[in-house]
Amino acid sequence: MTNILEGKVALVTGAGGGIGKAIVTAMARAGAAVVINDIGVSLSGEGGSASPAEETRAEIEGFGGRAVISTDSVSDWDAAQRMVALARDTFGRLDIVVNNAGILRDAMFHKMSPEQWLSVLNVHLNGAFFVSRAAAEVFREQETGAFVHMTSTSGLIGNIGQANYSAAKMAVIGLSKSIALDMKRYNVRSNCIAPFAWGRMTGNIPAETPDQIARVENLKKMTPEKNAPLAVFLGSDAAKDVTGQVFAVRRNEIFLMGQSRPIRSVHTGGDWTPETVRDHAIPALRPSFYPLDRSQDVFSWDPC
Image (cartoon, rainbow, N blue to C red):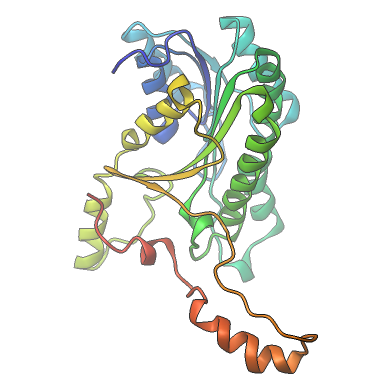
């Protein structure tokens, strides 16, 4: 890998394993000094250990990279300030923030508890805001910077049993677009990636029938590392004109995802009534209605 990030400093949250580890390691190989943020909790957010981050740092230092560890939680405002300060105190600046930290508390909507809802939003959405907001001060001062936020097709398209996760990931897209608009004047970019990868967040997919087993075996080929090249590019100066976009990566495929725009309209010469909406508006609009798709319904072909 070329040193496309030479002289840059990157902060990657949730970088002790999976996609976060793949990205922070790739950024270090590309020349960046990195902050490995990870609190070492389980997929549901329980426990806590510095060992995943330590293993990642050891790997990076093994090939001559520079890395420091943050074990602060993204879901705490003061902790987010500390991890940004750690980057500046250790490496003198901060150029890239990758908001990757996440947990799952899956449940059907009608059974989801307030704790399941709040815990997921606190990490995914509040965490992305807290860390980005802390870094914004540095980026404004430097008049340069890049945010890369991990979103999900669970939010973009939909999934069953993930109302908390889907809502948070869709909200991250709105946050990213707002950052891109508000901070354009400071040459700060903000983009999203919806990653496909086999790991802790997909390891609970059923594999009982022959079709399910075959699908899971194919999914396992979508390693976390497949998502790293796009993230590295988006953090580099080569992406200086790329902002406000939403990408998806599925094995060797890179998608530019759509953003909400009007797709069809109807109008009336007078005021609408419930009856004219029923009789005219809805029949005209219905052919353009979206079905209740899930991510796997839209991405129905095998990843290549």
